[in-house]
Length: 306
Image 1: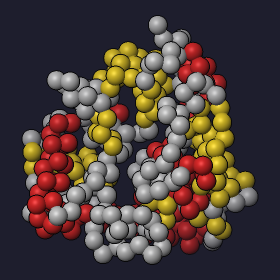
Image 2: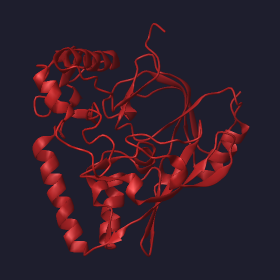
Image 3: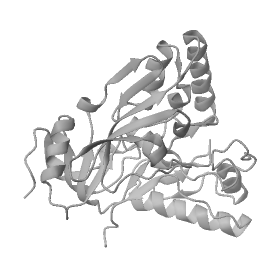
Image 4: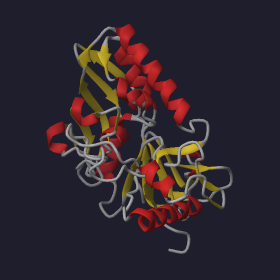
């Protein structure tokens, strides 16, 4: 038996409506905790053998059609506060990256790179999200987590080993908030920069489609480490184009005509359509350029026949 929380615990809950790509089978359980204390008590009482999977807003995720054999933890309203003190911004893990960027800018603090990153702060920290040459690692001071056995801990950013799209968090830990230290700038200049970033993104990316952001990482050594001396000449979209896969389709899945590193659900795609098209792109790129593209979208769960 599972513990009885104050929040919402739903058995056999389909996850397709919780992901941006709108695909995926059910979770054994979906837990939406009321607050930190509820989450901590639930995890402390949950049998250690039960798997947990913390899920953000599903912006960078393919849940496979067979669903997830775990308790999926999705943080909501009790975890989306944003507090600003001096040059520090503390944001709940469920707060949207774009909201945090805007609130910080109003206070004259520069977290503008978060403005165009889809998703929530918990996911941004876990994946060391970044764009325009800035990464979470550059500004993160510490995170609060609740461990799999229900303890609340504050972890300094230096202990997370943040690197390109990766971090080291204890197995089963749930990020509940993150504190950033940001540089000061004129609020109007920050607003203008964000408006420019949004316009640039909307002109080059299929933001009106069902997608999960960039599908593949840029090839290693080409802007994929985030180091200042890294080079940016080779982009994933370029090798996808060279392999003739811009606009490629499989079932309801398509590599966007507008930006070929965006995998989109044109309507009615299954998770298998999306993942299989991605794998076909990887194969064709390897044949054409000898480069093995690495997935940036996280794929979780089971195939139906598993």
